[in-house]
Length: 384
Ligand code: PLP
Image (tube, rainbow, N blue to C red; front, side, top):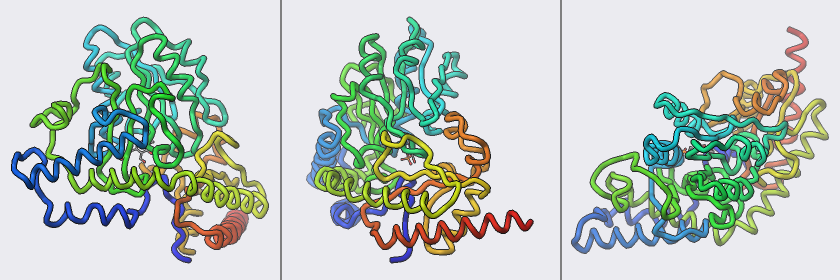
């Protein structure tokens, strides 16, 4: 039963079938897809198959899929690439105060270039109001970037509605879908999205590979200039094993997502209910229903989140305090601050994110251990 891994929003283990698909490309099938001889062309075919698998998962045209080194690069490319494509014709972008740092920092870089950046607020549940997006648009607006689901609290944003507003105004619309692709259905057409960020390691694929899916006609300059790979839009020798693994992970997600999601949602509800029943003064953070099916973000008054994470680690349970992507960070979470959560709850917040291999037994054990650890940490605090 141990360890109990409950940090799937930070990363997921490689699925066995993904590893199997990758192995030949880490061993004998090492050709460079840009080479014209047979070994190169075999690798090229594998890359193109993966492109189709990824496209199918998000209902996109395979020609619109560009492989990158992961979510961070795709976010940077979307923001900086669209801004550079506009040149001096536009000078304003709209995003939110709860984006991943990859988007926020890219926007900061763009601000230094002279663009104005509007950071939209969110409500107590982390939801962005589409009317606020509409009100923020000016004739100078050249990009709207709003995440599909938040990586900390799991809140799912009204992306289709926001996308329709962007389209009405002819403004390119980017969504960071790193936390949703593979967990809930993501259909680029239905969501009215022009640029979509994906990262393979959140859907049981390898780390260091992802994609930016770009609807044809979207203004976008390259971020990485180089040897003309990816139809001249993203330089760099293909990470063939990574891309093949990404494709296999996408295919796996299509096959198993519906059944896995329901099982994981039931386990997540069991975890939340168990903790709320057993632990006094625990609250569920984020939206009660519009949230990722695997996310339980809880705040415990009078407990330090990081200390609780370490206590649970000692019991063989892995979870995270705040956003694990930027761990080592002792600043309060920008997401929880933007949601207006009280500081004493922010301090005691812990994220549990479930995955395909978790079991009821593990969840019941976690509830027990959380109840025990919180009680102990609170008693130590009182006696200090
Ligand atoms: N965007 C979101 C919402 C994320 O959660 C993460 C990572 O956790 C990233 C972007 C960065 O992705 P990557 O780790 O592939 O660079």
